[in-house]
Length: 105
Length: 189
Image (cartoon, rainbow over the protein chains, first blue to last red):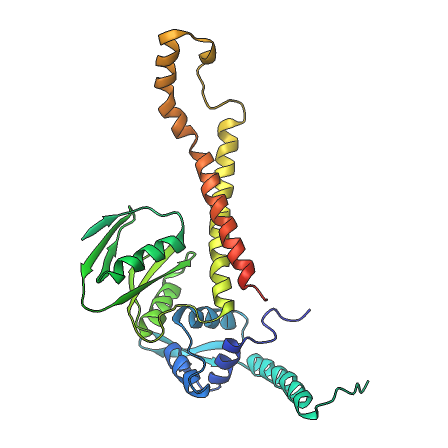
């Protein structure tokens, strides 16, 4: 069966992409605001829950502290999830671009 | 200014609190006995209620640190579990949940909380009534005149105490059902 977090929600997707560099929670929100041209502005509870969830599944991990803030980064497993998602999205994009739905198999 | 109120519905409580803040107050303190302390303020504030189960010391610190980074101040709430009260000046992001997934998970936490209290209520109900009715005095309903009334009036306070599990079942049954309705609204749709 498919993993329960797949396909990734927009929130999860952006967080994994943002955490390809080590960041603490609030910085993740700020980076995502920039990455999304201010269309995705995460709220505190959503970010906290998503970090908990991704950490629990081993897709991100704590790599240090900055004062009382925890710093997180994506894991190898998380990178693999992003690859799977990238393939899925590429396929969907190709359907947008080809404009026809000839079944190949 | 102090106000006393009692809520069995977390969303009604949040709504009531924000109605007070709209009148030009900010919330200073909330005690466990339903005493809400407000202070006049020229700034406008907004309150949001979250529900969390027991959190370890570290998790609770991290939880609070993230909310505080976003400008929320923790007014009340125990680490051992329960409602977490957050307040922030109006402006910018005034919600604590920004997507369906996290809002759904919030209702899921409320569901499991109500569920366990519902089970506790049912268990107490079973213990208390498995071999008796509400009134324990033998032959109470066969007594006559003043004796009957005296006995009835004497026993009624005890009956109210003994019917506590029934109230628990109704209360937590209702809140479980409400949380379930909301949860299924947000769950993958």
